[in-house]
Image (cartoon, rainbow over all chains, first blue to last red; front, side, top):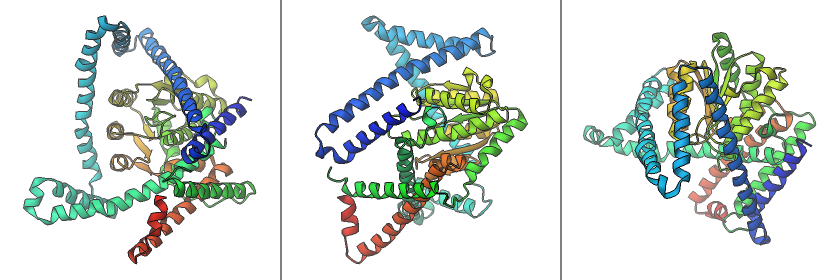
Amino acid sequence: MRKEVPIAIGFIVGILILFEYFLKGLWPGVAPAAQTVQNWGTIISAFAMGLAAANLVVIHSRRIKQRHPDAWMSFLLFAGMVLMVISGLSGKGGERLYKFLFDGLYLPLGTAMFSIMVFFIASAARRAFRARNIDGVLLLVSGLIVMMGNAPVGKLISPYFPVLTDWLMKYPNVAGNRAIIIGAALGMVATGFRVIAGIDRSYFGGE
Amino acid sequence: MVAGKQATFVIFILFLALLVYYMMRARSGKLPFIRRIPGLDAIEEAVGRATELGRPVFYVPGRTEINTAGAAQTIAGLEILEHVAKLTARYDTDLKVGVAAANVYPVADAIVRQSYLEEGKPEKVRPEMVQFLSNEQFAFAAACLSIMNQDQSASVILIGEFQAESMMLAEGAAMVGAVTIAGTSRTFQIPFFVAACDYTLIGEEMFAGGAYLSKDPGKTANLAAQDIGKIFAFLYILIGSLLVTIGYKWPVEWLKR
């Protein structure tokens, strides 16, 4: 029963959503039914958030208890969690604190993380752009052409750089992208079928 | 039927018929030929390396929730996690799984527990093995980088749906000297993985992972159906392009129906 019930629920829900996507005109009741099922999914996900928060609390409590060298980070995490919850739930009174935490700390930290990505890209490019084999040579040459085509100086060096860049981006790049998308779409349908048919059971804890 | 989805529906039904046909063939003992996928073969090597070095394997099953459009990628990542968890249990290697989506956490946790149970080592499971880190993109990336650095992970496996954080995770793994295996079907992130990782599963290769690694007849039949589907798509594009070039518009018009 532990396996059969989830498989049956998965099958019914999967068929309902597919029916709503393709054939909703045939049965007017299908759209509200599909919406209800999706709402249930959202509610279940909210419960999962509780489980995930409990996991955070357990792990970081253990770190503090074991006097881990980075236990102070766990303290910061708890402080952040508590402050955000209190300021978020205390209505008008906590609005200023919430705004300060969100606009003054959370957003700048996220932006700072995003901005350092350029260094990761440069570091990866240094390793990737090595002409070790024919693939590497192709990557290096096309990368250089696209870079020169997009940089203002490229046009000054040769008017062919923007033209070649345009050709590379419009034809070989789009062809490769579409091939990957078609393959991935078939893979997604096959994975969805395996889940709906109950062949793939990994999503409820193994075979 | 919903307008604009008729052709998709026909293709969908034909593909399902193909899947069922190959599955029945596989059940009767006629297993399809499966081509080698180096990225999936490398998983055992990556776990072996972690075992030899006595350092953990770090696994990320994407950053997408299980009830969104990217769910298929997350499920593919979780299928491969099952195989990785069995290997780490078998070889007594430490495993850490970083989760960004709250509703993926209980599933990943159940998969790891079940895998260790099946390998006869349920006592080796610790709460730290599967960690919910954050559902915020860069907070999650920072937490993953921190785990890789603190643990000096020997192998990092990133399979699922990733966004801008893909580059940080892949390059962060390379910086600690980890063997990196990554897979996604998001075309914007594939170049980052190709540039920064040792092995990359491109597009449908990650969906093949569960079938390829489990050798389950029902699942391997999927791979044959996918390959036939790709051949049909290729022929349709080729013949359709020729027909459109000489003035017949119906291959394009039919797809719009």
